[in-house]
Length: 461
Ligand SMILES: Cc1cc2nc3c(=O)[nH]c(=O)nc-3n(C[C@H](O)[C@H](O)[C@H](O)COP(=O)(O)OP(=O)(O)OC[C@H]3O[C@@H](n4cnc5c(N)ncnc54)[C@H](O)[C@@H]3O)c2cc1C
Image (tube, rainbow, N blue to C red):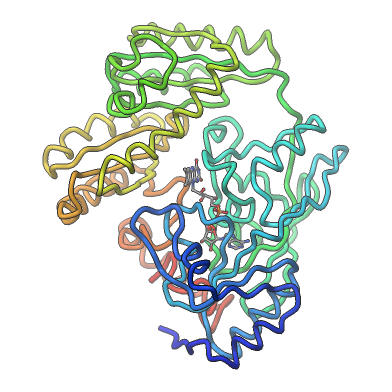
């Protein structure tokens, strides 16, 4: 493990001299950089800095190599795996102020942005020009495009449009040694050399600091329509999901909430019968208005054939936005209610979603925990909030979490579809990756960052 030096007054003075880098050492302000969106995790940096130019990031990383201190990149700190927390101390490098939309080129259908641009701000800016940037993490108004790239974020739209990685044509990143790397293309295609763009995307800030992104845009869908289906039980709801997809439908969202979630937030949903339901599917289709109307009706029929007690077609715009707000409220209410709350975001093959959720009651009973499940049924990405009434239950909940992860992997799934490894999931990494894969990935990290100064202690221990 690399040895790091504490930030002496002399090193702090050199950092303070770097142009376009604001140094923050006020203890109260440093508190804000000690946490991200992950419940229960906190690590305090020695200082934080806010960069406004890539050259400042380069100067900082050169100095970090010379004086051997760790640097942890941070977007807007909404991550759910502790990735932006400075576990080895040193400097937190905030990219939040590098937040310019440099260009939107409608004819080329691309946008060029700095990493601190908020996801929703780009969506709104391109929508004004008839274009669409699909990646839509539920945190879209509080997360940065740089953070989205570093975690390869996804959201409800993934089922139709794919993840962030599918929209990054190229990027600029400061390598740990301070060099500025331009990777990828501005074109729709490009196969020259190894795909360093796709390597850096999803590397959780361990291989480089992203300072610019070239993003692929698509035409804005003409219309969107929504359907809500209420099922008496979760398993038939998940079976309906598989049938919808097998029948050739590509909804632009295919989300679910289980009974426990409906009990928790059902009071906020503007439909009768919600709190008594065993599961709810929230389905959207977008595109040509006539086509999506037909499509959503056919999807409704599949739900009714699959045992839905009720389907509600095309709620008005107000109720539609209310539904999405409620879907986001689930996590907040769970966190308020339970002192112990472990977030997992497992993914299973599409045909096995029902099988996974059918196992959950058994695991709950065996480990004395309460599991809330919801999320992106359409791509098999199931968010599990695994909770207990007391922090003292942590050891038995940990055993339950491990059992669920093992089950997911045995089903051919993966332990994380969105949140990444960070520090929150490191302990399970050897369950999913082979020793050969871990060794090779360790060598890639050492090649990029021989002194281990960039986001140390993340992903791989
Ligand atoms: C309520 C809520 C809902 C969420 N819903 C979703 C969801 O639907 N889908 C989803 O995928 N995630 C979701 N998340 C998790 C989180 O919002 C995403 O991981 C998001 O991409 C993080 O962006 P950020 O700017 O907050 O990054 P941060 O939390 O600041 O950082 C995340 C990681 O990226 C690295 N990083 C950040 N910026 C850079 C950069 N410029 N260069 C290199 N590395 C960088 C950090 O080092 C860290 O490892 C949710 C979080 C919350 C709190």
